[in-house]
Length: 318
Image (cartoon, rainbow, N blue to C red):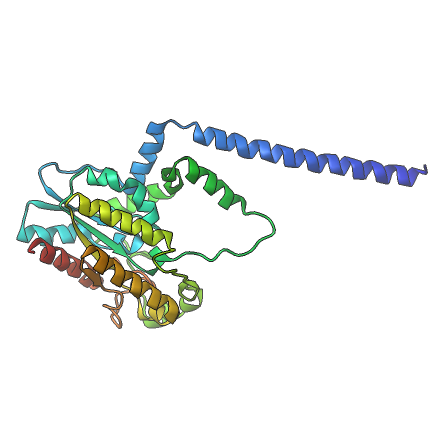
């Protein structure tokens, strides 16, 4: 065997060994991390999950009103809504328990714990994204993140709701619910964009990609139904609310998905005999938007929180 061939075979063999070792070592890291994660005691996991929704330091003597939903509901000013509601009946207290990125599937594992707090009213805000189901693209190789998530969900569905950004969310929410109704700081949450700025966001929007299957095959809709059933079975008044969207977002939602969403809303209302306040196009044309899907948390966009306060007061009076 000549010298060149010897070294070529040597390096090829050595390279194969390195690749094999690297793959084996990667598996060890992944499964060791998984083992450590799953070894966290239940108290720690429960603490993290409760932290995601915010600590529940509730007044045991008040009639509690819980606001649920995603970031669209976070933008509601709980302090202002509280003030409005207490002017009618000071025995009520409003708690904004909305969570960024939340959908019915995320909320369902925790709903029993919140029901134990015996709220008088649950206000649940939702929109197109809550029933959106991403289309699965065909890939030759499996997605590691997807496979890891399936393992976690099979062990405990609550584990998949842990949100590493919850600390930031908690800080923001706490600053929103202090004695000052509107903070002085200006950022992307508070700033109102003009129409040109909003139009510039259209090409980045997820609206054209929305995929909302019918209720009979849509897991998120089925989970919403489970939430509704649990709430009604415990004789808690339920308010369902379709959150507002900017007109430029509404314009680019495919008609097929609009029809599917509207049909789901109608079915929920009829099946569970609950009025649904559809505010999806309520603020079309108004200069109150932080982006295409969020009303700004701003004194000039106060109409949003005022309208929700009116809805709650109307339901209290029924």
